[in-house]
Each structure stands twice: as structure tokens, then as C-alpha cells.
Image (cartoon, rainbow, N blue to C red; front, side):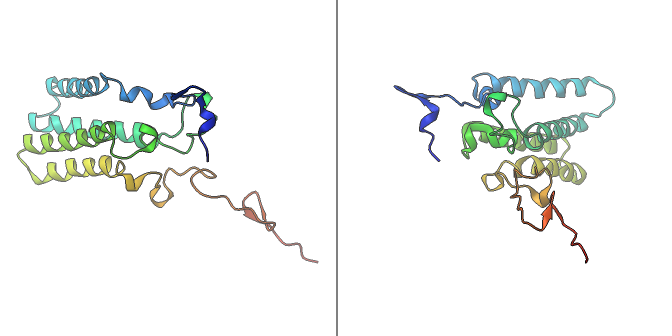
Length: 184
């Protein structure tokens, strides 16, 4: 596949099909705002009377884990119509930096759940229950970010028929089902 038609003549640095869905993630203040939102959520949980001091970081870690899993690893595609469905089979994390592994943005997105897990375990005095909960959440968040998991759908969960797997057609199938043979 040649990408020579995606660039303007005389300006090889400008990609006409830049993915606007993830372009914002490499912005200069995104990491600062991301950390600030996590600290704000922790602050809201901390000032509430529902959770003890040792539970605050664990609840923050759980909220972060669920939110980032859904936003980064579950929702697929791109809301921008100019891509013509090129990213329909990719999650947001798979679209970051054009799928190049171990970029600064991807390393940061691996570091945050890891640090949240460590902070939550430390503030809970490494009690076994908190270790299991926090490390479980961290593993769910981090394993999907490894390059070996790029475009991998475990047990077919969250796979898109026709995009993530090959659709095979044969004369014996009608609409993906085995055709009934007529008896004479």
C-alpha cells in the first residue's frame, strides 16, 4: 500500500488524512489536565463521608480503570466522517500515534494506572484485599496497552464482524448461514 497520494506536493510533512480523533492526545497540556482530573475526582471522593481514607485511592483507581477501559479500549471507530471508515475497527488506544508502540503518549497512559495502583496499595497499608482489587484493575488497564495486544480481541469480545475477522463467502452459504439443500 502506498501513502504517496496522502501528501501535498512540495510539503511532505502534511498528512491529508490525519486522524483528528486522537490528534488532541499529543497536545502540550493534555497530560497535566489528565492528572488534574484524577486529583479532582480523588478530592471529591476524599471530602465525601462515604469512604474511609484508605478507600479513597482505591475508589479513584476503580473509577479511572472503568472510565479509561471504556473510553480507550472498548469504543471503536472515529466520529470524523472524513476518514471514510478507515478507523472503524480500531479502538481509541490503537489509533494513538498511528499504532506505533512505546511512544511518549502510550507510555504515559501505561504509567498512570500503574502509579494509581501503587498509591492505592500504599495508602491501604498493603492489605491483601486492596492489593487484589487495585492490581486487578491495573492489569486490566495495562495489558491492553502492550504492543502484543494491538488489534487483538480476546475470545472475540468486542470484535466487529467483517472488520476484525475475515468474512468468507461460498456458494453454499446465504447471509452467512448454511443454505438448505432442496430434496427432490
